[in-house]
Length: 217
Image 1 (cartoon, rainbow, N blue to C red):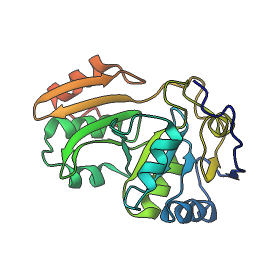
Image 2: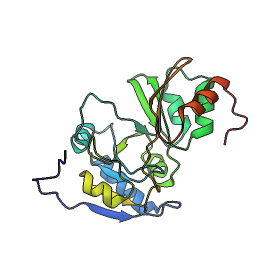
Image 3: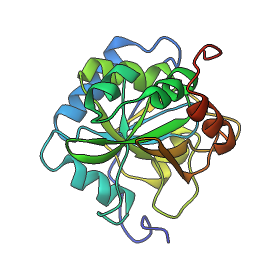
Image 4: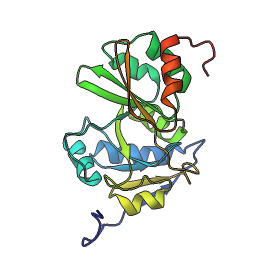
C-alpha cells in the first residue's frame, strides 16, 4: 500500500554528508532536529533508516506514523558502540560479548532484556549514524526508511520518496543490495533468529556457542 498517494508531502531538507568523515555541522543539524522531536533519515551500511530520539515526548509516535506500522511492533535502537548496549542490558554474557566483538559495528541487531523490556540494538558499520549517536549522547530509535511492507531503501532519494521526515542525511548509496541486518534475540544461553539478513544465522550460532572472540575483528 502506498501511503503517500493522495496527500501532499511537505518539503524535506537534505544535507549531503561524507560517509567516512561526517561533517560536524551536518551532524549538529541532525541532532537539533532529533532534540526537537523530529525525524531524520540516516544511511547505514545495509539500508537507509529513519531515526528519532525516544527520550523526546511524542517522537516515537511520530516515527510510528511515518513508518505506517503497528504501534505494538518494537523498534530497534541505534547505539554508538557495544558499551552503551552492555550498560543497558540486564543479563550480558560471554556469548553476547562474542557476537558484539565479531559483528559490531556491522549488520547485526541484538535483542536483549533491559529495564524497559526487550530492546533491539544495532551498531552500524557506518560513520554517519555512529557519530550521530555519539553526538546525541544516547541511543536513538532507528527503523528502516520505508513504509511498512514496502521494499527497503538504499539511497536517500528512495528513502525520501517512501517516508516523511524533517531532515535527510545523504551519504550516497548504502549498499549494492538493500539487505537488512540479521535480528537475534538472546535470552540467557538461548539464541533465536527473528530475521535473517546480511549475516547467516548459522555463523551467529557458531560464534555464540563457542563464545570465542580470538578470531573476532
